[in-house]
Image (tube, rainbow, N blue to C red; front, top):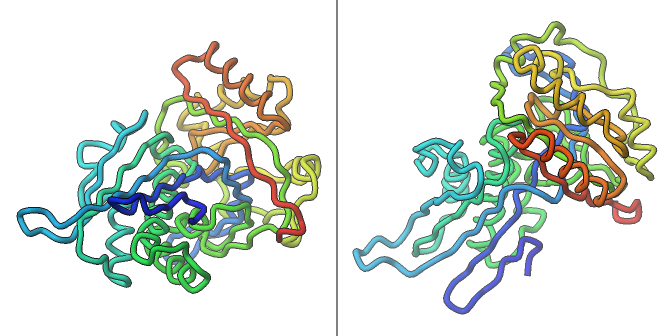
Length: 321
């Protein structure tokens, strides 16, 4: 049995996987390549909340069609994906097609259902996380086992072809990332804590945010090595010397982001509030999940049109590194 919950259930293989949100705790823009891609340094973490993908299989159809993958979409934010969400250009289906070119699917039909719980184009890597989860599900479907190290190397190469954020979502563990996002250094030690995600319901186009950057050659992240953080206070202290270089540009496009941050920073127990990625989702870090859930209730009472969610962030003891 893999960590994703894959299992043989009598009539068919039916794995499911949580596609965790990707949160940029810090994001520094340190340069720009000749091809236009920006160079970044970021600390990313993956709370236990996100979209959910379920893959089911079936026998060949009566009409003789024996292979192929279909996609259905539900959940709160399904409508934000548009009318052609299940079409051939969907990133999830592109991931499965890329995998099929390396490791063909045995004869049979399969259907992937995406429960879209994360806002679309909101700075928390929903589409990238979905693609990464689809790669892992597809591998398990084809092999009947969890991915081993060799499999993960192959999937990482496919993930980078799909997008710069997909490889880090494939790992879904706290890491320092650099380059355009493809250089990933997992942290050996990370403190357990809680997070609140808040989105004001306004889309922020990433190219427009980068276009408003005043400086593309900013200082790098403070050095920590790649050991990580022994305690929550250590993490917060280190984050105090970091920033999100996209935050001010995003606020200039969507002032509501500033409203979210101002509200979060006024709340008891919030140790840090910042925007993730290119926005508009913001996050608050707290020590306890109970405090995080209370904050979500407060946000809902004051701004019922905002989306908010609380989740734990799993810790990594140093001995597990």
